Image (cartoon, rainbow, N blue to C red; front, side, top):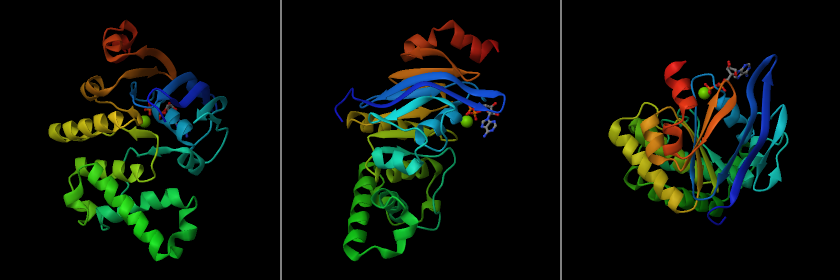
Length: 253
Ligand code: ADP
Ligand code: MG
C-alpha cells in the first residue's frame, strides 16, 4: 500500500469484561509509512486493544477494519491473511531451533492459513521457497550471520529482532509490536529503533505498545495515550510531551 494509506482503523471500540470497561470508545488509525505508539499506565487497556486489532479477541461494541474490511469476530488468521503481522509481549521462539527455522515458520503460517494441518505435507519446492523467504527477511533485519545458530543462543535484543523477522516473513503491511524494547540494553534499543525506522521507510505501518518513553518519543510519528480504557490524548511526540492530562496520568496519578 502507498504511504499514507489507512491500513488499520478502530472505531469507537468498547470492550467489557463483566462490569469492567477495559476499552471505552477507543478510535485510532494506522497508516502505511508511519510508526504509531500506544502508551498508558499499567491496566490502561493497551493489551486488550492489541487483542482487538489482531483478532485474538473481538470488541463488545464498535468495529475494527483491516485493509478496509470490517473484521467483526474474524479469527486472527484472517487478520494475518489480510496483511497483519505481530509479535508478542514475551518472546515466543523455539529456542533449540535455528533462527532460520524460526523465521521460516512465520512464512509458513502465511502460506498455509492452518499451518499445523499442512506442516508435514510441504513439497520440496514449497519448503525451499519458505526458507529462501526466511533468509531474505533475516538479511533485511541484519541478522544474516546468525541464521544458522539456535535462537536461544542470541541476546534478548536479537531474539526480539528474530521475532520481527518472523512476522515479516508473512509479508505484512501492518506490524504490531507488543513492548518490543522491554528489557533491552541501550545499544539493543538503538538497533531495534534503527530497524523500525528502516521498515517505516520501506512503507510498513507499525503500531507499538511500549512503556519506554524515551524509545517512543524518539521513534513514533503519532502517539495515542490510554488511561482507564479511554483515549486521553493523541498527537505528535511534542504534543504529547507537553499535554497536561498526560503528565497528570503519568506523574500525578
Ligand atoms: P494494559 O495492557 O494497559 O496494562 P490490559 O488491557 O491488560 O491493560 O487491562 C485493562 C483492564 O482490563 C485491567 O483492569 C485488566 O485487569 C482487565 N482485563 C484485561 N483482560 C481481562 C480479561 N480477560 N478478563 C477480565 N479482565 C481483564
Ligand atoms: Mg499489557
